Image 1 (cartoon, rainbow, N blue to C red):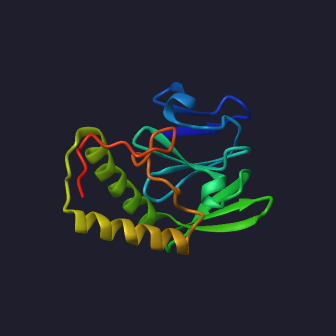
Image 2 (cartoon, rainbow, N blue to C red; image 1 turned 90 degrees about the vertical axis):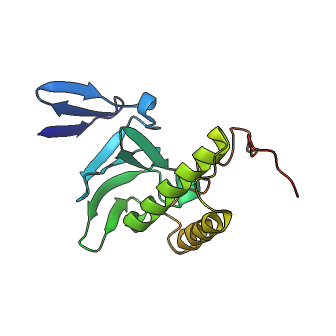
Length: 170
């Protein structure tokens, strides 16, 4: 059994087998002012913060759905999921519906492919398969803009440039 608590300034804490563990910036959480925590049916922890919006905790890492890119509010008050695979997010600005399962799965797959290509120089899938998946991601992001990050993690460096270890031709 585990217990999660959120704090205003010290991030979320997890108690497992009698031991407390603090989470925060080292795991990718961008805002330590936690308003709400929700574990969905798949075991993913969703964290709503005061200034940083919605975060997903999966495989030991937080992913922020940045308010500027996701169109979700910065201040998340409460969350719950339904039987149809949506995460419902309450804020001072209203209620938002997040189509989490499809976007998460496609985002994670594309992110893995991008990492393999940009970091190791390997192409795990055919270009046509990648292009089709990226096009689908962009379509879904257009339908559900609040749920998807605007840029996949390994597509650009901090300056916005696309860096590739593989020589480009054409």
